[in-house]
Length: 416
Figure (cartoon, rainbow, N blue to C red):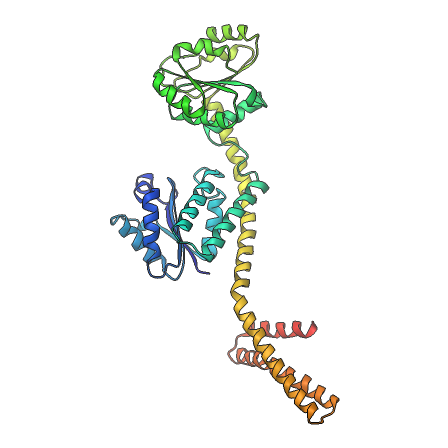
């Protein structure tokens, strides 16, 4: 079997080092082919994300040898304090844990599974995988699917963007029937807008001081762009408002919101203010039909959800232990296959030879009782010769465990 993993991740290396060791797609394919030609590397997959770079391989090459390769490939970086090497059972358990999101910076996140599948696809396309890693990665993907379906590891939102969507669903069960207004066009609004677009929100406006940036984001999430001056007008249509800008003063006022509510005939508005200082005037929360949440509210929700994920992770770890044991058992069964076939062929040869001797005895005029007795006695002696010799040698070498196991197998065979 011989699975091994060499790598560094967010637990062992700072981002400044991780980014130096990361492979982009072009470099990764070239590195795969170079590594595949190293002595002792039968199959290899390289996983490289912002939070980890890991080499998965099968073959007799050691962790030290691949550590040297990685250091050399990256121009002599000092990686030793940050690297870990895992093999066999630990390597299998690690692969399953990574695929399931249990080894991620954000516990239970699902993005790593897609990244793992892409890394495996690239290695396959480069001709760098074979039966061993194919079985390992297919099993890892299957385990990740089982973890997602049988535990709640990914059920609770743990990012500001996903938590915002989660809160919105508490107010509006069906987001596809509602309109959203995103105020700002920075990284946080970009991510939040994408989450709402994925959630199927019916209509979305992006309001920003720089219209060009709003238009660029709007084009990617199938929204439309407006200037900040249009916010008061957009409030009339917006069921959902999310704000995150660098404005020193609130952009959404109590007066403008009250006016919008009157024209909306008091249809409720869900608002989230992710900015510091705030973009939505705090007094807006005094209005009926407004559900206003701040970044502190979301942080509390995220902390609660993280605790729920940690509880779910305990269930997931038990499931992983079960799957690792199953994978190892199947691997041992495959490894024993050739020996079992050889043993059966050997027994079949003994049987054929002994039957032929019995047949000649019948032809020579021996009685059927005499031939049957010979056949039974000779087959018993010849088939038990090798295991009884092994039992005697084990006893003579003071190996009671092996001797007991051989004896147990012989007794079980007799009882059958």
